[in-house]
Length: 255
Image 1 (cartoon, rainbow, N blue to C red):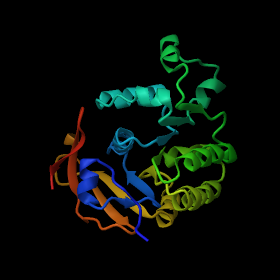
Image 2: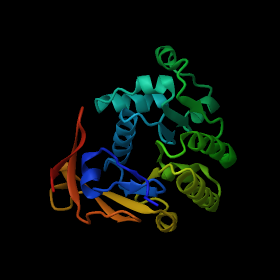
Image 3: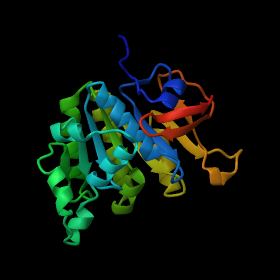
């Protein structure tokens, strides 16, 4: 049986993972704040959409409107995909605004009105509701597309019992990745909930690390990426230096 694979279309990842990844993978992207984790997920989403596949992006640190502006800053126009529902934002952040009685500005509300790709989660602290939506989308994608979660660190700030989140991620791995063959990639910040992070890494099929290059002046914020491990996929073990260019996304500076 030939393994089904997912190619990213993102220059540094394609260099580090020339075969891509198994579609049955649960992968963590780990790094300090500012190392480019969310930008990486944005480009993975854009490249996946351009190939004609669907993307479910779980937003735990951002509103859909704010994330759309981040895509635009990269030179990636995804609003058409959101309107059609090919890019779906599972909004687990705006409940904070609703709890304070704050509405979207009128101009943003008009832009987002009727978009099929925006799904509000009334209370993401209810993990059953969160899971139901992810499972529904994964079932409809089955063997196509990708699920992106940004970020699990934020989830831990709203989940009373971290063990329940770990159990949920194991279910996501079993059902979404292994059964429906939809890869899942999540981000996680270094320096927070480290005990949980170590356990989560063990439960994942692959680990990507992002960092600031320690060999240059840190104020320059030169970023690097590596694949620490990836089950079922050949990978290069070296750190790759990259930058972000509008319209191009992540580009390798030196190999």
